[in-house]
Amino acid sequence: MLLIAGCSFAWGDELVGSRSKPPTHYDLVFGSILSLKLGLEYNNISACGNSNYKIFRDVMNNMHLNPSHIFILWSDPLRKENLLEVDNHQRDLLKVHTTMSMTQWHENRWDDLMLSMEEGVAHKWARHHPFNYMTSFGRSEKAIDAYGTGLCTGFTHLLPQMIAMQYMCDGMGIKISQGVFHGEVFSEVQRYMAKIERFPSSNQLKKWNTWVLDSLDKLRPENKLGMNPDKSFDENVTIKSLMGDRPMKKWGHPDETAHVDYAEYLYKIIKNL
Image (tube, rainbow, N blue to C red; front, side, top):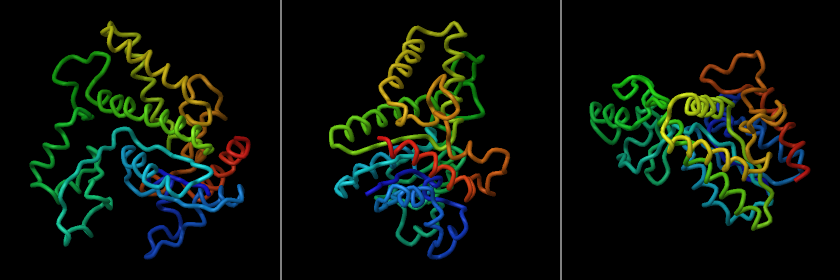
């Protein structure tokens, strides 16, 4: 069985039929197309708005299904989650559906916080976290501004999750591949790593740079798709990059053709694992 995990990009948001009630788009999603190519049963546990914390937890919660193959499409490292109380009668107001009351949010998508706290408090809560696009901590910019702190902190948490998944699946005899939903995730991290090298940064920041590169070295190429430093385009394909010059859908998701192409790209990798 092929287990797919991720956010809206892996769930197939904005594909034809995805907004129907119930959704009717499932055969158009790259995971479904990939499962047919591999001749495997298929279970997609992705959900719109998922943070990487939830993606990791969802995979762990579904290991009892005994998948033979796993593909994880990791999301934006800036996404967060918090255990917040949402009244039963307000659950339908959530922009991102929660499980176990773990509210999924982002500093630019924090409407759901207002179901658990007053609007002003929710705004302060979102802006309190150190990943704010609009500030450099009230000082002249150094290597890491506030946005970089948030992004690189999330990336620091993501890398051990990816390594753990690889090691766990190796030990269980499961064939695993992992990638990120768009290349900007890693290119932005690389931009900050270059600034750390270029600026008169602290020794600890330079140690962080070294740790990132060492961590990436622990991941096999098929487990860091879209984030292989200094590799060819074929090893850095993302579902977003397959859009080419075509515009993304209205809310920023890839189209049906990109899902077909991504399934073909993954098939060529996964069939040889």
